[in-house]
Length: 233
View (tube, rainbow, N blue to C red):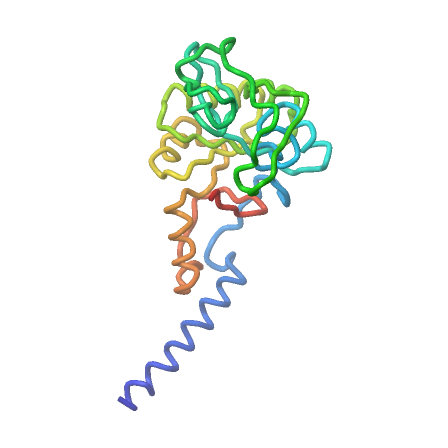
């Protein structure tokens, strides 16, 4: 046993020191990557704790407050418009038990006058704007603001239309693909690989595993980095 420890402890110590050195100096093994953009603050659902979530009023307020990124989820209406909404079913947000995909754009209901902030118990948001936003309106009004677009369903038409809007408004460098599902994120990257992309849940867990085992510096990443790694919960 003692002879085993005699060899094992120095080897383990050497491994730990090497891993720490490479973690602090990744350029030794990997080519330095260009940062997609710098991001210190993200407005979840457009800053939903301050205005009604995902409305143009919320996005405008967030930008005026100096946010670095607008975060949102997108869905497709029955007549093919890409709209911004956290949920596909609108009952929580509007009081009507209907889905976005079952309605044309002009038939989408308004948000409730006071909408509960789901991640802040007991808090409600309100505002003058209660209209469900178009993704195109967000791109048009905030041409230089980074946006994270989460795709929650593997809908090829939705992914293609989001990509087309990103290209139309020349936003491939500042619009991020996001999804917690690896299969959806893979499809997004297949349709438009020029856009930065976030980690899926599985990829995030793998990242933590590699970090705590000391293997992270040895693994090459294909992810184009932003200045802040974040996870959606």
